[in-house]
Amino acid sequence: MLDSAAWQKLQGTLRGELLTLEHSDYDSARRVFNVMIDKRPAAIARCAGAADVVACVRFAREHDLLVSMRGGGHNVAGKAVCDGGLVIDLSGMKGIRVDPARRTARAQPGLTLGEFDRETQAFGLATTLGVLSATGISGLTLGGGLGWLMGKHGLACDNVLSYDVVTANGHLLTACAEENPDLYWGLRGAGANFGVVTSFEYCLYPLGTILGGGLMYSPADSLKALRVYGELCRDVPDELGTAAGFITLPDRASVFVISVCYAGVPAEGVTLLHPLRSLGVAADGAKPMTYVEMQSSLDWYFPPGHYHYWKSAFLKGLSDDAIRVLAEYGASRPTALTGIFLEHIHGSAARVASDATAFPHRGEGFNLLITTSWADPNDAEKSIQWTRAFWEAMQPFMRQGAYVNYLSEGEGNERVRAAYGLNHARLVALKNKYDPTNFFRMNQNIQPSA
Image (tube, rainbow, N blue to C red):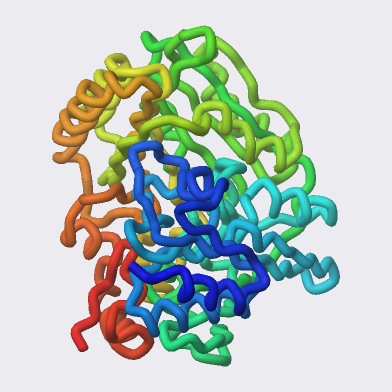
């Protein structure tokens, strides 16, 4: 443990505030989205800009401190905080500058999706960024970034034109196609391993009113709805983003829901949804809305202050056997806020070569996400047991790979390697170059061989 004089010296170099254990805001600042994570860092540096980040990295190197990086703090594995080390807290860095003529946005890492979307939609522009407004743009983008618009515009990482990043030696670099292109490649999918990104430059696209919302079915119709959903996804235009799953409504009713986001002419989207509506929906919430409304439409299902145990995998497809297992466990979810979701990856996101970015999981298909969540600590055992049983039952239908942003704590090195797929060896070489001592290791870690 460092003495107070050392921390005071760091504070003297910062424009932002340094929180040590005695600070009144310390406990609130160390909390993250997943209440299962309960770590106690030695200090939390609320950075005000890139210079603060540089100072923190150099201080941590000088004193051999473990560091973690916090953006939105929404990652289920809790990598944003560390025990006994220094948290480089970027959550206060919320600057954004939209250039409507160039259709770009320069954004700092403390922004959430909702904050970013409000600024870009003021100019009728948007880019792919997740599905929950409270998610931080930084972690989401650095891990790849699935989202409603990925069919039309690719993943979040596909739309980053450049990064400003503080590397392990405390230097601030720009990474883009022309400058440090190897680092630019690695930041698009494995970014947390290589430095602290202090700004992102995104490519934006025109986007006005979309056709969005959910079509809900009774559990008795879930098998039929899943089959029709799978058939629909075999031949959908790039403009139609979808996700399907089992949730519980606020009135405690369990439903199967297909959420849609049609980023084209809304009237054309209505025609596309006809096969889904012809099944006989219990509730039809698909309607014209703003993209900001769409991005917050699932927020109610992920309130703060809950425990989370998640599992995720890419599926081989939606076979009849896979559908039966999904429906079985959809009917036996242990808590009201436990969800089962299928995210359809297609279109522009699927047409990128697997080695074009560090994110390797291209090609059309589905990502299964099990979001087991509970508020009462006494529900932990049954919730975790149910999740593991469901996970085992789905093993025959999974294919190699994992989405790094959905990995939970303690899944093991093999799952981490699976997240980077065939790009892992190239990423190790990049780690050897930019972080040979594994200074940045509070992440889904790529270990250097140097």
